[in-house]
Length: 136
Image (tube, rainbow, N blue to C red; front, side, top):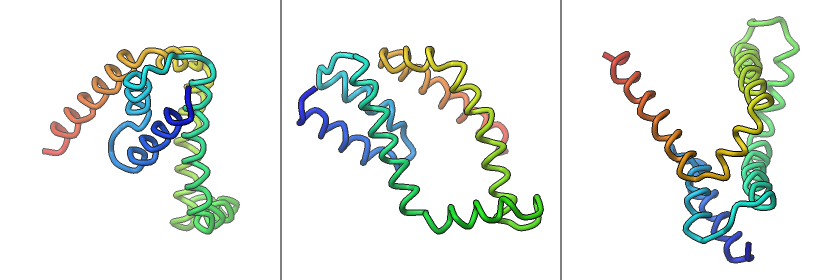
């Protein structure tokens, strides 16, 4: 991967992370359009630029995060911040377990942009259908 290709992928990540589209899918499409072959290095690069996005969020929301961490140690479910902190922890546990046990599957998804995009589209269709049917 060249510097220019890495720069373009970084721009794609920056533009798509905070809008309601899949930044990961856009990175994979960009990888395909730029003719960047799949490799462990490219996989690591994609993970690192997404980790950079997370780091920027930690920096931006530092005061809010400290408030949540402090409230976590208060009496459970006693304040809105405490409830939010507990909900974040409880929601993270299943995601972490799934990520841990399905690491190989996820890595294979990154190497196949078509499969990854198909799964994302299928999931979006299900969520939109549920929102439509439950919203009435």
